[in-house]
Image (tube, rainbow, N blue to C red; front, side, top):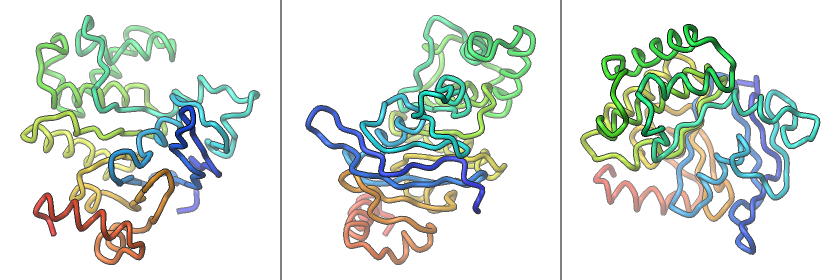
Length: 250
């Protein structure tokens, strides 16, 4: 793949004196699924949030379709609508129904009509198997169902890229499978996706490329069969051995 849609160059992010990202060079191509793995505190979620400027980088460059979105001449607001974000904690509006949660961004940001927004929302709620819950409030459905609604909400904006920040980490174990199946189906249908995850089996099965982050840098990246079966970096090997042993997958 050489149709690069997102690229970062020497991306750094500090929180006070704490340097969380220490110079990240990264690319994602159109139609590619990239899974980012690594220990807690390695900078994975911060990196993801820098891609759509939910966190402003301290220095470096972020390019979207060849344009530097940190340049003042770039419409950052418009660019952000091209990157759908699915959060760890769902971030649904508890006072709105499932359907309204999937419509509000369309009507307020994309300026779609109510009819168009509802039709689009229903399409993607059906995609994730949640169309029968359109009138429910978030506190009336399970965590796995909330996350599927959050995915439908992101899809309803019809972005070019989907960003997932540990989408299953807040779920009870029995709910993880349904959410992963939805993400897997989206990946196989050709969506460009960058997924921060601790689900190693999922990363191995769904990824075109796996990125291992450690202490604010990309320590290693490559096809899943290489990263999981024959990692070159000692830190990658140690991390995978620890995680796979813990989960009984080694």
